[in-house]
Length: 166
Image (cartoon, rainbow, N blue to C red; front, top):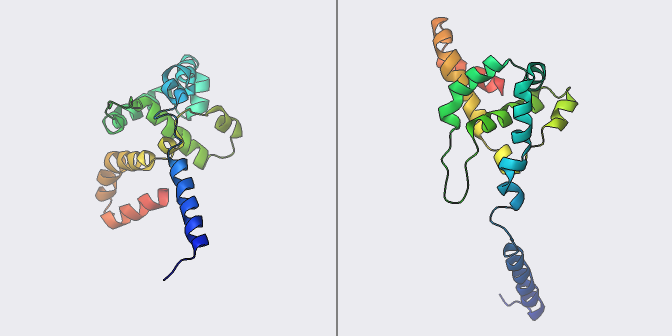
C-alpha cells in the first residue's frame, strides 16, 4: 500500500509531537510532593484533631480509641517500604486517607468535611486499590468468618455479602 507524501509528513509530525510530549517532564517527584511531610494537610490537621476529641469524632466518625484499634489491626497491612526514590506514606496517613475516601463515598451529606480534606497525595495514590483491599481484609479476617460460619452461612454467601458492602 503506497502512502502519499502528505500522509507520511502528517505521520512524522504526529510522532515528533508525541515524543516531545513524553520528554517534557521536569521532575521525577514534584517539589510539592517532596514537601508533603512539612506542608501536607495531614501533618497539619491530624495533630490538631488529636487535641480536640469532639472534632476528631466529627472528622473520623469514631472515637480515638476505635481509631487506634483499627490502626493496630491494619498496621502491618498498611506499612510500605521506603525506596531509594520515594519515602513511603505512613500507615496512619494511609488509614486517614482511606477513612476520608469512604467518608466521601458513603456520607456525601457532610460537604464541609469533604472540603476540609484536600490531601497533597497524588491522585493515583489516593485512588489506589489499597483502600478497598485493606478494609475487605480487615472486615473479612477479623469479623466475618468466625461469626458467620458459626451461624452456618457458607463462604459463597460471605463473598456475596462482601460484594454488597462495596
